Image (cartoon, rainbow, N blue to C red; front, side):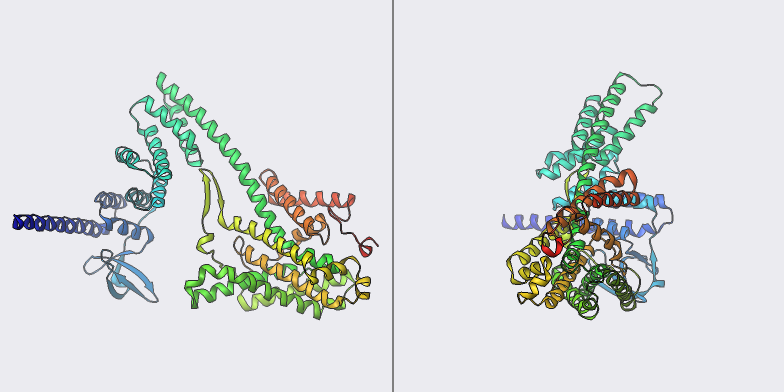
Length: 546
């Protein structure tokens, strides 16, 4: 009896091994046949590879989509190739075994066009519908929504019934409803599918309903059921469009708050230097630029020497940017600004010259082209609230970072000796000197603090803008508008000013364009300053009032 059981077990293992070998050979044979020139034949082969259900099929198809799948010219064997200088490092796509290095002439690239790419993406999505990771299954369902093949109707229905994960089931149901709407047999099933799509909403659903509406209108003869379906589709389409309009308003508000946080970071340092010393610092934008380039240097060091710490490079860049920009600010104040107090026009011209000098210095060191500053993994992607409404993680982080910097500065100004002395110099410089406060030292520290905060703004801006020598110039005028509108030297005024200008700007842009929106805002500020020359929240003090 034991012998019989062992024999059955061995036979079962043998059959399993043979089936796996046959599947692997089938995928390999199909992959070899991708050498054909006809793109239509390649499309058929790709679909056959996906239908095998073999685990290696996903690797083969994804490699083909990425352009890393080649065939050897001598034997026509499929290999994965990665370029290393003048040669290509080869590996087996089925086992991952290293196959050495060869010249390009020993390989034949499998060429594909856009149509084949679409079929590849759909085939990979089909294979990923049963992936153990829920995120992969959701992504696969969303990809299939854009390539609704009738052959998927029955298998996807089975997957919907078997799925237990809530978010995955919802994505499957939405794609299944789209398939039923296009390829369903009964009018009742198609009507229910429209209701399911209406509840899901989103740009893809709007495109599908709009396409379906056009198809129904184009029919020369339509029966009562088709007319009923068309009315339901049109009603659902209007509902989805209203929903997307509301989402658009929410996204405009988010974009406005995001722009406000950027303006706040860029202007908050200027509010300190301009408010305390009355210095019109045209080089403030270059302090922002220095902070951005500091971030770039730290990331390059992490990439080359400490790749495991790349995700933490942005956190390390914040204090480093503050220190580097702060030191630059102190040097500028001690070497130039200290000799020009009380002469605002000469200060403006001097700092403008410094800004040009710093821009050219950065061009000489780093070059004139934009530098890439990557986002760590924890800042990549977006928070998708629902279909058609998502918020990017990097902009959410900038909003909270701007509020954190503002709160930190307020604590420094309200709770530290330096903050007390700085406020004293702001309100009455002569009286502060008579009380023993070294105003020159406070001026240097204040200028360094404002420049350091601008450097931290550069770290944040490196995540949403190009890092180039002209980075600061894009924000210097807006920063002055925020400071003047909110009230010179007042942090609360800077917050309110940045919030107002950012949100108003983003709501005007869809109607007037980006340039006209800025012009309207500038005109509104000029008219406002005519009525309130000191801004929304004017500082009080004898020197200020005098």
